[in-house]
Length: 147
Image (cartoon, rainbow, N blue to C red; front, top):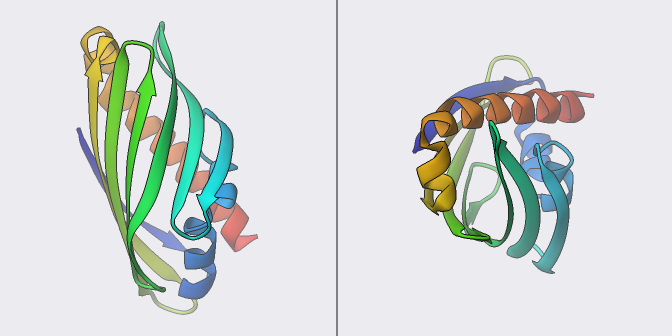
């Protein structure tokens, strides 16, 4: 499943970058995240998140690692998580550019592969639910960054 979008944030690129590469700050806006542990500062972290697709629910624990960081312009993170009977791999990228005034335009992509029981039981719901969770995340992140 591939997701992508563009978000305009009323803040400088440095401020947006600082928020989005901090797993502790991002986790405050990520729906379902229960815990985050920084394993290697600025490089690797572990998270636990509960995700529901209708009546199908799963609790994933996984590690994420920044594989590319070009401050304050571009970042790429890869993650792998497991839940009972399921696994997920995510590669996400963001690029930041200066917008009009003191705004930042962020273009982002996420490539998500879910395998196992969750994929077979909730395949139809993954795209719309993921899109909704992404919208909730960006609404919260914008509010925190712009505030």
